[in-house]
Amino acid sequence: MTWPESRYILDMRVDATTYSQVSRQILAWARAGAGRAVCCANVHMVMEAFDHPGFRRAVNSADLVTSDGMPLVWALKGMGVPGASRVYGPDLMRLLLAAAEGEGLRAGFLGGSPETLARLLANVAAQYPGLPVAFAESPPFRTLSQEEERDTVARIQSAGVQLLFVGLGCPKQEAWVAEHRERLSCVALAVGAAFDFLAETKPQAPRWMQARGLEWLFRVMTEPRRLWRRYLIANPRFIWHFTRQLLAAQGGAQ
Image 1 (tube, rainbow, N blue to C red):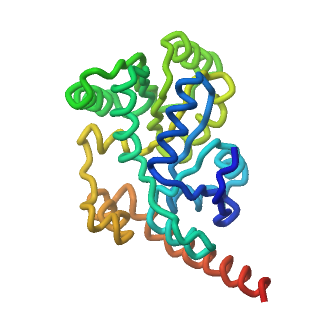
Image 2 (tube, rainbow, N blue to C red):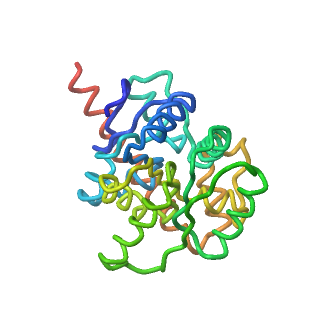
C-alpha cells in the first residue's frame, strides 16, 4: 500500500500519516488477519538504509513506514508535506494496546532481554488488564537457524496473534518483519526502543526534548558508550546528505 503522502528521504520511503490514520488502518488489518509490516522510522534507520541497499529494500517493502523521529517530520515538511506530524513508536504502541484491549485483539511480543520482556509484560498486564496476550518471547541474542525461525513463526501463528510488537533493535527488527510478513496472519510492528520504555528499563526523553528533536541528545547522555557513534556520526551525515537532496530537487525544479 502506498499512502497518499509519501516521500523518499535518501531513497527510503517515509509515509506522512497521523496517529488516527495509522491506528485505524493497523486495527483494520489486524481484524482481517492480514500479514502486514509496519516500521517506525528515525534518522538511524534512514542512514542504515542509505548504507545498505538490501535493508533499504526491506523498509521500502513495508506496508507502512511512520515518521517516528522529529527530523523526519521536518524533512517531510521540507519536501512539500506541510501537515506532516510525528507518529512515535512508543506512543503508537500504547495507543494500539489500549485499542486491542477494548476490542479483544490478541497481542504478541517478540524481543527484548528476558528481564525487559518480563517487566514489559507486567506493566502491560497492569495498564491493560483486559488485553489478551497470546505470545511473548525473548529470542537468543544470535542469528537463529532457519528451523528456529520457522518454529517461531509457527508458534506465533498457532497462538492466533493479531498484533505482533517486535523489539529486536534496528536494523534486525525491520528485516525480520519484512522477511516473515508473508507467512504471518498478523500485523508485525517494528517498534525498537518501545519495549525498553514501556518496560521502564530505560528512561524516556522529556516531551519538550522530543518536540524539539533533541531525543537523540537525551539518549546519548543516558547511554553514551552504546549510542555515541550512532548519533554523533549518523546525524551529521544525515544533515549533509539530505541537504544535498533538497538542493538537487530545488535545482531540478528551476
